[in-house]
Length: 167
Image 1: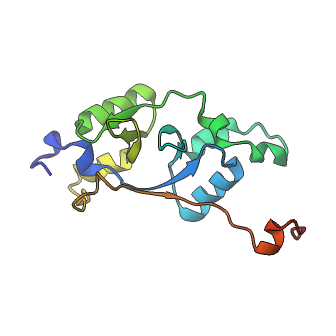
Image 2: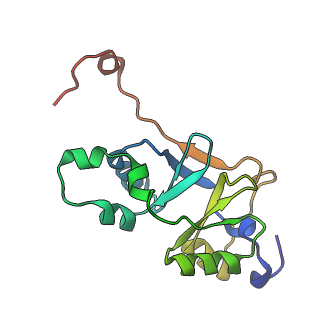
């Protein structure tokens, strides 16, 4: 980690413990994960680990047209697919991350590796924490092994085997 805020790199302040959802996940499941887990930003990743977008409450609200329950079953890729996704690398300056956020009018930016795979997220909150001197201390090897969680719903066996779910 560098000695001053101005010299800090994205890798010094980014969040590496990030909940992700698959592109085919439903908007309802993503919303529930965000709400129940207290997540403000949930990256949407492809099967090969590439970030195709980031869900936040504003994006979810903008995508909601007031339609019925079927609208909440649409895949999250349809919600984030039309938006330009800014990203920075772990060795970029935090000033570069802040510029990317400002240019995209977002409060987050994805952090990707050399092959454009998601390795973390940097948010406005991370930047404020860095200014306040409260940067997290990454564990050795954190860039090689980011903690990206993918949660999949699991139904009890009786429902998975074709039984009717309770109503």
